[in-house]
Image (cartoon, rainbow over all chains, first blue to last red; front, side, top):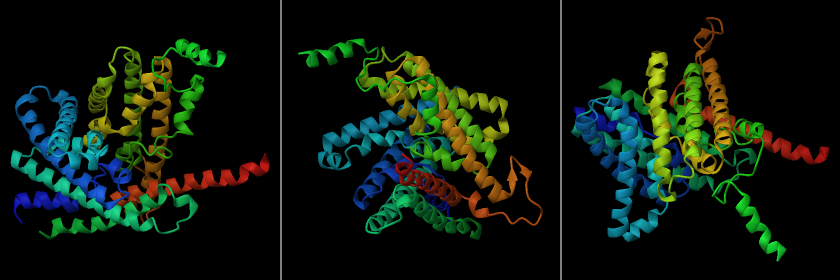
Length: 192
Length: 228
């Protein structure tokens, strides 16, 4: 497997951002009530992840070389602005999609997956192409995890769990099982 | 007439400009709220990314809790001090900038004094910025009260966060590794429950903790009326 495709598969499955690295858990538990919204939010996240990877890479390569201590602050400001720009663009050119996404678009700012991507690509010293592949893998992995979780939760709506498991207990244990399933992909790296 | 004038007079008396200000409480109540009834991890489920990512051993969980407490107290103080000068439209951005400043401070302090822990936590310290607990407390509490109460609330929430993280991390370290703070607890025949050290163990531990809390709440609900 080529180097780039390995980065892609690794972020998509082996080190899935949500289920193995614990990034973006707020949306994972918050908006996985319906499959429809879950995968739409996943794709919106993928787009923002791509934008972030691009801007964080240029910021890191040309601006932050001499001031590494400003990294966190600079990244979060760039992410907040990127989300704002995406929101305005979608509102202007794709009003139907904007209405479907509603509140979830601005909420992407506080998604730790976005900041996490910027920080991980910096600490692993990825090149621009590697960073973009990393972003697509992370975004699709997020979409996969959100859709899986949402489809399981749609089924559990119809069941009758014990009173104490009604709020978060059941959801967390389901997440644990999903995460365990994804641990099975860990063998892929060693088989190479 | 009196009924109509009374709320207006009350509004003029209120020190905060925001109508949604939290009700007055003693400082002790402000601190205790974060540890007990409004515990950020076990009751509100805020800031779950660090809760599960760094609680595989006690030292990491505790360090994460202390760092978050530092950021909560510092950002609470400054958000509260600037609450009358920040325009409503740019408040979220200003809060994030204040939080990011304190996170950078915490990151550098930790790297300087405990390089091992700093390396183990890695990007999860800068990721405190994206912890919804911080923005949530800034918006819901610190921006609406005086600096003393904001600090008390930050301290309470931070302590609640630290205690919960330490409890989860102890559970995972003791059963998953057979050690506590690196010291072996059981004899050589102990078989560690490796599952708890892996990512699914994080979801599982919090799930179990959540079931226990829900059980206690349910038990109290059923037993309280009989005593009264």
